[in-house]
Every structure is written in structure tokens, then in C-alpha cells.
Length: 73
Image 1 (tube, rainbow, N blue to C red):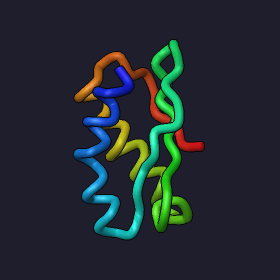
Image 2 (image 1 turned 180 degrees about the vertical axis):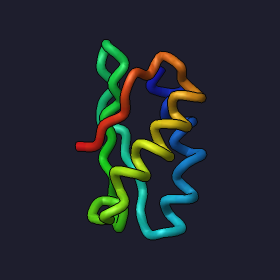
Image 3 (image 1 turned 90 degrees about the horizontal axis):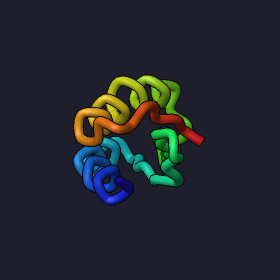
């Protein structure tokens, strides 16, 4: 599942990089929680929680339906 998540994140990264940010996959738990670290300008952006839930999580769940939740560390 980790490889599928990385592949899905590769679809998101160009949008994040365009704004000076990126995302790193930290952990995938057995119960389907994906833990990410937002990097660069995404790490301190006031809209990062919206980007995480409405952007990244939505795309990841479409690509990898087993995912229950995406959280930022």
C-alpha cells in the first residue's frame, strides 16, 4: 500500500512544489491512517489543514480506497 500512496502523492507534489512546498510520507498505520509531513512553505501555511483534507486526503482516498484518514505530523 505504501508504494500506491507514494504514487498518488507524486500526483499532488507538482501543485505543492509550485507554491514552494512538498509532502513526505512518514507512516502508514495498520488501521489505514496515513501520516504525512508538509514541508517548505506548506509546513507553515495557514491553509495547510485545508490543503491536507480537501486536496491531499481526497486524492489519496480516490487512489487508495483502504485509507481511512490522512493526518499531518
